[in-house]
Length: 125
View 1 (cartoon, rainbow, N blue to C red):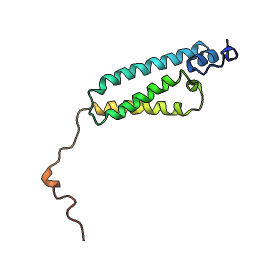
View 2: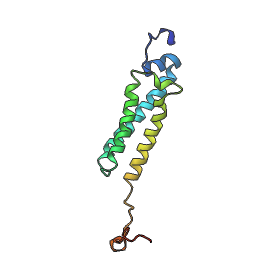
View 3: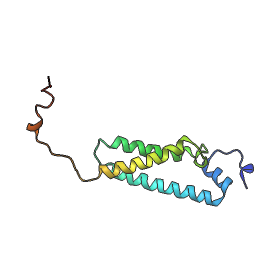
View 4: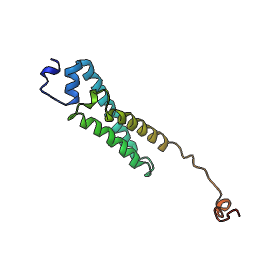
């Protein structure tokens, strides 16, 4: 078919298939399935992590969902240079790091309050 007969579509899924064939459509499909897999995994783990980390994980999940939802209207999934292509690895890796460290066993340092109760009160002359 080719891009000449694609009726000016900016849908990344259709445009990728029309431009590069079934291989590109397969790559886009695998990427989409893996993103959905991780989104569902993070959504399940979201309720197990500290509330402090939840907004950051929500941002990563929203960024990934926005990337794939926007690909239906824009052709940035198959572009060589795009801001969205720069942000998607950042969202994915940040989400993975947040989940990894937020679900890690508590490694907080226990300190003696008496040792630190006068901290900041004595200023050097």
